[in-house]
Picture 1 (cartoon, rainbow, N blue to C red):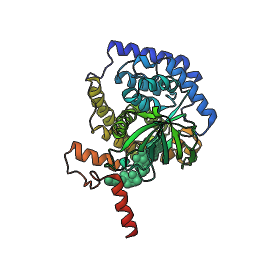
Picture 2 (picture 1 turned 90 degrees about the horizontal axis):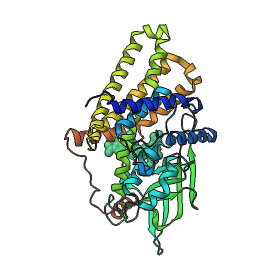
Picture 3 (picture 1 turned 90 degrees about the vertical axis):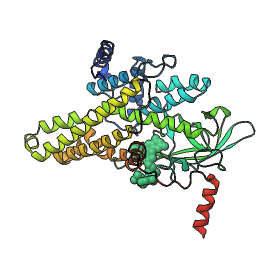
Picture 4 (picture 1 turned 180 degrees about the horizontal axis):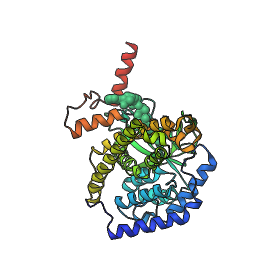
Length: 402
Ligand SMILES: Cc1cc2nc3c(=O)[nH]c(=O)nc-3n(C[C@H](O)[C@H](O)[C@H](O)COP(=O)(O)OP(=O)(O)OC[C@H]3O[C@@H](n4cnc5c(N)ncnc54)[C@H](O)[C@@H]3O)c2cc1C
């Protein structure tokens, strides 16, 4: 792949750079808490501006308000946003993952109702997949949706780690609709209005002090018949689409993290740190890893630009990116010392980034996938794959009582 911009891409970059230079004065700061309603309101307004300038849903088709451009243009926008030192969209999950899934699997009515307000941040979306007993083993979902005679559904269960549920209008929710088939088969994806009766959102306070993600309790929540996305019993395939877009969003987002440059300039401005061989070695190792992630990312981009889907090797980027980000924040804490806590951006990154080791698939799960699907190593034993989910519960109950 030619890594230089084509003349069209260079024009697009110049247009994005020019718009950002003219509007960055009105942007909210990059560091801020999604726990703070004023900050969220500013981020909503900023997302609306980005959307109207065509810098939000770059790869969405134009009929849904996007620019209909390719992944390379998305990366260009992410790079320019990082360069301008402004935040990107507030609803990364909605624009990067759930909107594209609605475009792929949603009905015409769902697309026309939801995509516009999502793009303009009038309605933020959240992803309600994880449960206390279903994270890495996502197909172990126990949240239950039962059909009603009128074609609707009643939904009960508990979700956890739901980012942005505290201000989201809608959730894309994975629920079990048929427990009598193997665990991957009886799942269905449902749209849940977060203001529906029976939805309770409780913030989970993180080490950073904020409550950006939540546990969500669903008690006999009534859903209409048009809540299903992608077909009843087809929830696993729909969830895989969301997870594929999640990998791409995390991968392309790497271009928008401005912190390596900030770390390098922090070190450069401190003569003692800049002369310290150990600091220089740690910075060098981290930068080398980030460069490897960037070039691995270009492989994924090349596949996308050719109309292919990047393979499981894309998981390597997440493992390497998160580990080097953790090492970067550790280095920043060592170089800056306790004053790092007074710096809003560094203190946020130092406390927030370790959580990313779990978000979007843990390192162990990604390494398993890479081992099995890239290196061809033997698969993990999966004894529960062909047994009805209800039977698995029965075995567990017997084990517990027996
Ligand atoms: C910042 C953040 C935001 C998040 N946002 C959302 C969100 O918006 N929506 C949502 O649905 N979820 C969200 N999550 C949840 C995330 O998807 C889960 O944390 C993740 O899937 C891991 O699941 P778990 O936490 O239940 O850990 P577990 O699955 O219980 O894993 C615990 C440990 O066991 C290891 N492990 C598990 N199985 C294996 C195995 N087979 N082989 C080897 N090791 C194994 C794991 O690697 C991990 O170290 C978020 C998480 C974080 C940290």
